Amino acid sequence: MKPNHPPRIAVLLVNLGTPDEPTAPAVRRYLKQFLSDPRVIEIPQFLWAIILNLFVLPSRPKRVAEAYASVWEGDSPIRRILKEQVALLQQRFDSEDTPFDISVHPAMTYGNPGIPDVMDKLRSEGVEHFVILPLFPQYSATSGGAVYDAVTKWSLQQRNLPNLTIVKDYFAHPLYIKALADSIRRFQSEHGKPDKLMFSFHGIPQPYADKGDPYPKRCKCTAAQVAQELGLNDDEWIISFQSRFGKQEWVKPYTDVTLEEWGKSGVRSVQVVSPAFSADCLETLEELAMENRDNFLNAGGQEYHYIPALNTDEGHIDMMEALAKPLVAGWAGTLDGWV
Image (cartoon, rainbow, N blue to C red; front, side):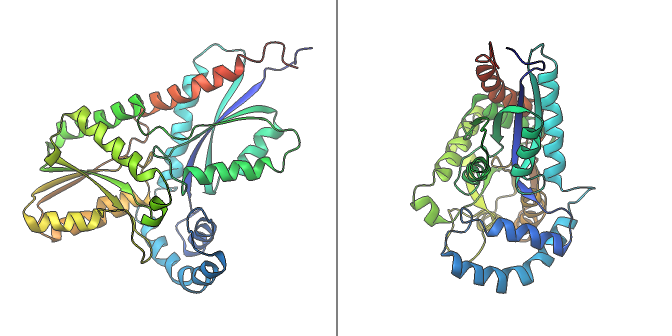
């Protein structure tokens, strides 16, 4: 017996998260959830709980809230852009004639809309299969790993499990490399070529990499492939890592230190792109576009530009479609005679 309604398939585009509003209480709630994740902070939890609750959360939220306020336009940039990406990918599925009900939804590892809440709602509406696409191009246990954890924890509460497919990452996907290279070309056609092009990735602590986190190697692969696509010489570009937190050593070279050294050594113009971010957010719009710009110019540099994230770029949506559609079609093809 076949069902009276088409089988439902949900594609989840997942990004890291954001506070609900740019206020200290909202930021505190968000940071508590984010920084309590042992995937993010890998020190003994009893010790970290003391540090987090006595030192980090009493002081940091106000400062972070002020930074969020500087980039907030009706909503957090990362959540607003994620919703726009969802709408554009949904249009791609809607344009095809299919016997299945395919819908695309936003979800966040931390904050709202949270992964468990989104999956609960969709499951109650009859979704039978989830295709989960974390928008972290380069897998790290601190980002993509946390998505796996959230889905696993949700699954442990389910009696009738749905089908689940998770895309690990896409750091070397040809459409991703092309979209990045094309975005840089377009930017440089308007602003000219700089003395140096910096590929700045969100950093992770060096001990995480030492334990086997593949993230730094994936970042280097992404940057090298884009540089090759652009035909850059080795002295025209560099890879660096930003957004350090705490006192331990992080993966090097550091973005802020490198920019300061460049400014002092006579590098006149710099353009910075951040391929680890699928959507502009606090770390790009405030840290890279403003804070690090000031670091470079104050050190003696003359011209600094941040190249926006891929956001809703058509090539970016092409890549999402290329990743999601085969997984949807592959599972849907097993539904003949579905009951």
